[in-house]
Amino acid sequence: MKKLLINRYTGERLELPDQTAGERSLWLFKRRIRAFDGLIQDKGLSVSFLTITQSDDLLDGSRWITGLMQTIKKAIERSGGKIYYVAALEIQPRRYKKYGVIAPHWHVAVACSSPGLLPHGHRLENGHVEKEREGKVITWDWLYKNIRQKFGMYFVCDCWSHQVFDYLGKYLAKGDQLLDLIRSTGKRVRVFSSSRFPVRYQMTYDQKREYDDLILEDPDLADLYTRCEGSQIVLRGKEVIEHEWENGYVFRKVLYPKIRSIQGAWIIDQPGDTDRSVPLGESGVSSERS
Image 1 (cartoon, rainbow, N blue to C red):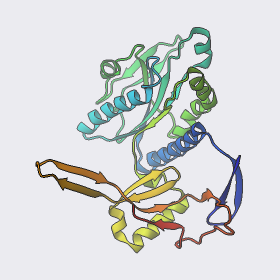
Image 2 (image 1 turned 120 degrees about the vertical axis):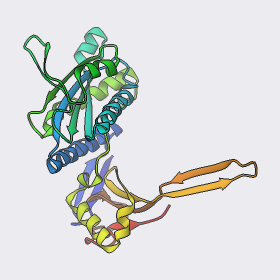
Image 3 (image 1 turned 120 degrees about the horizontal axis):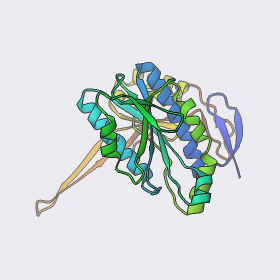
Image 4 (image 1 turned 30 degrees about the vertical axis):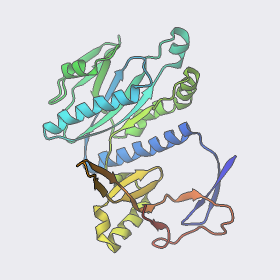
C-alpha cells in the first residue's frame, strides 16, 4: 500500500510505498550522519575512525558499543575534552553462510574537540596494524583493556575527510543484506548507534526558520528540552509529580510533556483534506500539552 505525502509549504503531493521499520531506521540514521557532518564542520572538530570486531552476540551489540563509547566519552570529558560519535554495524553475509560466523564489525566515527585524543595507526598490506601514535587520553592499551570481547580486534586512524557520510555510506549500502541476515537468524537487533548532539544540526532549513521564529515570539521556549523525534522537532517541558503517603513513602514521577512540535516539510495526507499547505509562521507549528 502506497503512502500519500503532502508538502505543507508548497502543497505538492508525493506518493511513496510504505517503509518497513528497518528502512525507516536506515533513513533516519542517514539524516543523523549528515547532521553529524554539519556539527563537525561548524565546530571544527577532529575526527577519528574506530573499527572494532566484537563477539557474535548481535542482540547485545548496540548496547555494548553504546556502553563502550560512553566509557570513552567519560574519559575524554574528565580531561576537559568533548566527543560525539555515530556508529554503523557491518557483518559479512558470505562468511556467515560459509562458516556460520557472524563476526560483526562496528565502524565508528568519533569527533573530538581537539586532535590527538585517540591513537592513530594504519594497516599494512599483510593486514597487520602499525601503531604510529598514542592518544593523549585513549591509548592502544586502554582500548585493549576496555573492549573485552571474544575477538577484541580494533583499529583507529585519523580521518582523511570530514565527510563522515562518505565513509559510512558503503556500510549503510549493505543494509538490505544485513536486514535479510537478521531475519534469517530470527533476531531483532539495532544496527546503528550514536551519541546525542545539538538538535539544531538535525533540523531542516525550514525547521530552523520556524524554530527561530518561535524563539523570537516567545524567548522562554529556548529553555525547553528540544529533541529530534523522527522527522519532527519536539519541545518538551519538565513536570515533577510528588505524593507523600501516610507511612512517609514519597512517590516521585518526572514527566516531560510536549509543549510545541515542528513537523517536517512532508507529512501524511489525511483522507478528506483538500489543501494542507501551510504558510510559514501560521498553523504549521502545533501547540499542545499532554
